[in-house]
Every structure is written in C-alpha cells, then in structure tokens.
Length: 367
Image (cartoon, rainbow, N blue to C red; front, side):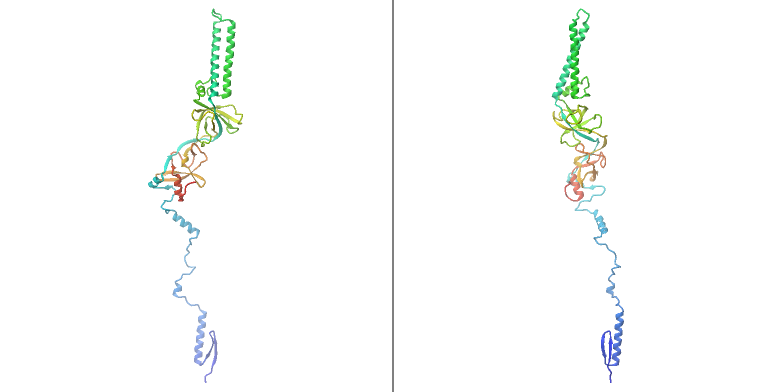
C-alpha cells in the first residue's frame, strides 16, 4: 500500500506518489537553493565589454583644454588658401603683391616740438607803404636842412657869410626836420614794434619789400598764458582748416603791440608773398617745448583697427609686419613717432586696408 506524503519547498507544493519520487524532488529543491545563493559566472560576451571605470579617459570636444589644443593645431593651417600671419609678419607672394597693388614709401627722419595755436592776420601793404614813404620823406628833409645849416655855419666870418637871420632860420628848420624824422620813426615803431628787423636806422631793402607787397607782414596773437616768456624763434602759419603740421614758415619774429581784442601776446613775422592773401585770417602755431628727434610716417600708411592706429612695415621683400603707431602728434600730412617705426623703414602707403583685411581673414575693409 502506497502512502502519499505532502512535500513543500521553494518551488511550491508537490505530492510524491512514491518514496523514490520524494527523494528526487528533494534533490531538485536543494539544487535550486544553491543556484539562488551564487551569481552566474560572466560569459565570454560579457567579458569583452570593458568596464566603465577601467576605460581610458577620453576628452570630449567641449572640454576647454581639448578645444584650445585643437585651435592651436589649426592655427598654422591655411584658411581659404591664404597664409596665416606669423609673428614675423604677413607673407605674400609676388603675384599677390602685384594683384593688391601694394606701394611702399621710405620713412623720413624728422624733428618735432610741441606747439600752441593762435590767430593771425596778413597786413595790407598800403599802410606799410604810407609809413615807409613818410619815413623816407622825413629823412630826406632832415638831411637837406642839416646840410643847409652846415653850409651857413661854414661861411660864417667870410666874405660870403649869410646874415644872422638866415643862419637862425636854417638852425630852426634843422631842428624841426630832425623832430619830424624822429616822429616818423616813432610812429613806425609804435605801429610795427619796438624791435623790428630793419633796426632804428631802417633797412631800406626790407622796408621797400614790405611796402611793395613782395614780402608780407603777419600779425599773430596768442591767448594769455599760452606761450612761455620770451619771443619764439620761428612761427608756422596756415589757412584755417589746414591739417596740423602743414603750412608756411614765418621768419624774423619780433614782439608786436598787444591786441586790444585778444588778451595775451602778439608778434609780427614775415611771410613770403603768394602763400596767403592780404587781409586773410590764418592760424599760427608757436613751439612751446623742446625739439624731439624721430620719424615721420605718411598719413596714407595709417589704418585703424581695434581703436588703434597701425601701419605695415616691410621687413623683407613680400613680408609686412603690422606695427602700432602713435597718432597723437600729427605733422605735415603724417604722424611724428619715436617708437615702432624708425627712419629708413619702408611702410605700405597703398593697399594697407587690403593687408589688414587679409590678415584678419575677414575680407572686410578697414575702419
């Protein structure tokens, strides 16, 4: 007679129909319990996948260091077929230079002094001619009366002696004519300064040149405190609106009577005829500082970039170095500089904007 025994395990409830079946069922339950306590061994496919911790550390393109390395590596590569500029300048082939039409000019040595500006007037020569004529008339009259008095005095006590009345008349006339000559000279000095270049005796050649208009007289006035003490050795004049540093040289500077309309100091100077018209208002510059030596860069060589002034210096044929210049001292259609560029350097005066555009690879014109 077979007895049915109830059996329970992790897999559920079973009913054994025989003692042998119960033993087999117990063995299966034991095997299932052992399998649950141990992890399955990794397969060969699983072993071939590297663990995240042991994988090599690779930088993503967004990493800053990786991006900078990539940028540095690409900096030396041509962009759109153009050679990138190096620290030695922008290098161009002869074909590129010819295509752009580059032209260079040699930088010249120059001297510069700080200046202050005032206003001047070119005097009409009519007034000077009248003053010169009065002076010449007074000189001739005084010379004649002096000679008449000397002749009268020389004949005194001889058979041909003149009367005392004639001698007294000649003496009086000589005094009057001498006073008239002195007045003419004083009037000339009161109008045209106490220390004119023609002197007290009168340089007739200079006065005649002023009288006939072949030499012009300029009266320049400067505001109070604009000039140091003393008389400037030279002045420079130009029409109003002319670029700073450009104009005419005024010579023979001497003090002039003060201008009642402009508190300050005034000077006379001589100007070559033809540079300006009589009665014309001009601007006048006077040096106020010591002279400095440097170089003159043409205005055509300057280009503006990033709010600064630059020029391109040709370091060798086909190579142009972008160099910063100081544009704070404009002078004669250019700039006076003491750094960056020296006398004898060659700078680009035509095609500068194209060089800047090519160097920046923007293709845009300069500012």
